[in-house]
Length: 386
Image 1 (cartoon, one colour):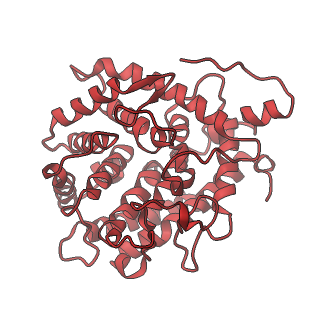
Image 2 (spheres, helix red, strand yellow):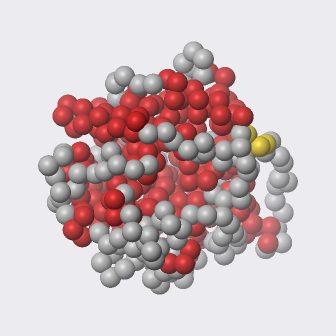
């Protein structure tokens, strides 16, 4: 495998766009043609029979959550711009298919608990693409999207990071100009404040877990919520603590990436692959990187991780769909709630594609990330707790 540091920033961006296209195209093309259920395989743990109820909603919401900022970039006459225009068309047609009850690909908003999770990711996508997934939508699609995001109110989320799925759906309703429930948002914010463990890390509920849920869900959704609420009375005090903790967590995430582009396989949901670095990617997108972590180094580190996982043999099946695994096809690491659609949360690492090509993330010279620099014997900054 070619070392990512041999690529320029422009070459890295082109590679990331190719990864986006490889992962997202099967999902969004099939949905736009109303054939997602017909084409997408449903891989799940042996003996788990209910995932076909939920896996298609998972694939759609989780694909959108990672590519939304890229869709939001203005049109241009580059090859990337042409591809983005294609994807905007796919998303528009796909949303109609997903939100129309008569469609064969109408998504499951009403049965079971899992749709609560995907409503959160769908709401997060709306917040990340305020034009493509909000202002530019036709009235019918917006109304159907609002109804879909409201559909989970008859179910109670678990006393865990699931509170944030409910809260993010409500904040998305607020952004869409619809009636929303401030209590669900307030409860999630206050509970996560109570669950804060220190040094930039939250518990998943009252307990702390060694896993990547601070990045899969908790910190990214907290950041999106406080940014959307802004200085709204009653919640303004949450903003700075949430953002400062996200900045510290981004520093930790950068240091977790080894010189070889690997990272510790800790905790559950490892089949989300490089979605584990959503927080670091979000910090790069939003300008939240700490001073000692440069955009050029983060680009190199994330590129190394992406290449290690996306290019591992067995990551995709013959039809181009993701397979359960951490590095290749490893069905044994898939928990009972994991199926083909779940895996598309990996797109969350691609958030910096929402930055223009001349942003420092893409234009800065390549730089070694912390672990690569220190393990080579060179000097580096001291790590400090928050």
